[in-house]
Length: 323
Image (cartoon, rainbow, N blue to C red; front, side):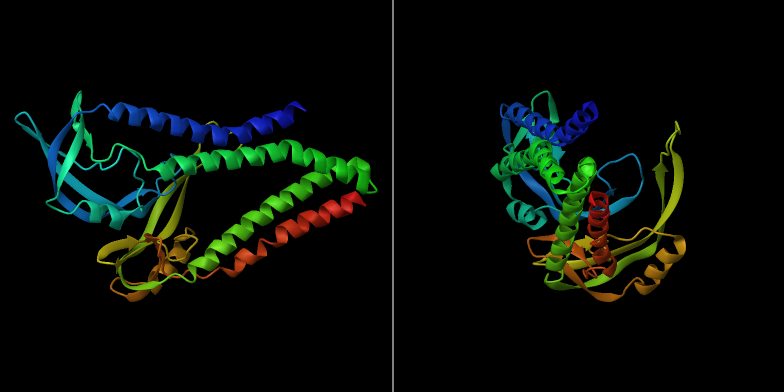
């Protein structure tokens, strides 16, 4: 029983972290709300490509991916000193988000109000209020994960009683219940992936051009059971970067497939690179809701459908155990 509660506490960690991040950001907004303001002027406003960590800053790999940012730089003067800053919002900007919208709000030469930290005058923002949808999204994620945890605690327990009263081999009820729960969860995840990928196939297209094409090695830290320090493994991926324009904004992407850029052996990566030499003209599929998100080939890999066999196999095992 104690082990079950450890699992529940582990699941509760995810909504807890999101709630903590929202509270931390709230106090950061409160801190910025008292900052004084000065007039400023936008001096740079253009899309910018940046190579960022491929897994959100994880220390497990040094692999990077291409993301698009709205590079808005503004000047402001305090006393006799002129400062430059490129932070637009108090929120975190991880890239590939509202690039065109931000550039449209802050064209070069626009007069703006700059809010600066009186204790660190080089720290400033143009927008010190977080968008309302961000709070709603955080609340929705926390409530959704909380509902899943409550279902895991009470729903699976009720399902277990139902299974025990139904199957011939009642002693296997916990195992059969676990099989049903895993099959449902795994099937929903696969269904969500295929649904999103199917939508990507209907994305609009734009003319693009390959700007970079070569094989990139990167390090992956693999920590095996019983090892005190992780082992470094060298992996390879095709570093294919393409450029395309949507509504007058130049974007860059590095996804060949919708499901990623591919990271395999050096030979496989070289085969992909050979198909997309620098200068190749191609058609890029982009997300109309967020043109920063794109892929060269958004087709659903056939291998994805084979994942549907996993819940079928698990349910079959559960059925045999119940008999």
